[in-house]
Image 1 (cartoon, rainbow, N blue to C red):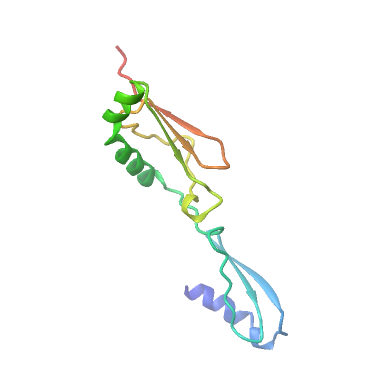
Image 2: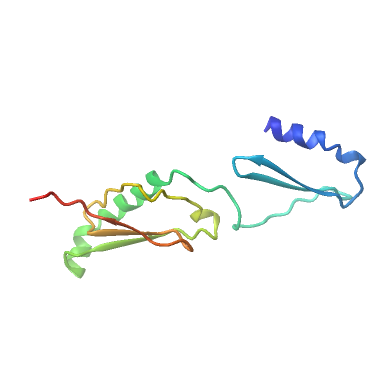
Length: 132
């Protein structure tokens, strides 16, 4: 936060005309859009921007674990080839994640777990089988 404040102070906004706009790329994916106005105004961009979780494995693993608690009931209804689809809508804050292609997930008994980070391609994780 201190470096952000320093960057803003260095811009000397007091000497700039009303309507002056600047963009500060701070690094780590943080970008500030600053516009000098007559009075302070804050704009909400709603649920369209935000941080991208670059280590979502714990969240995904937790979701799989929760669903696996119902696996017996799912198998009784759908049969033994029970699969799970998890969707992360990356258009919204709640779905902003990046999962490495080489990630390993425990499918917790599901035959296949599909992770769909919309609009990116679906990632497929198959149950590990013991070589027999």
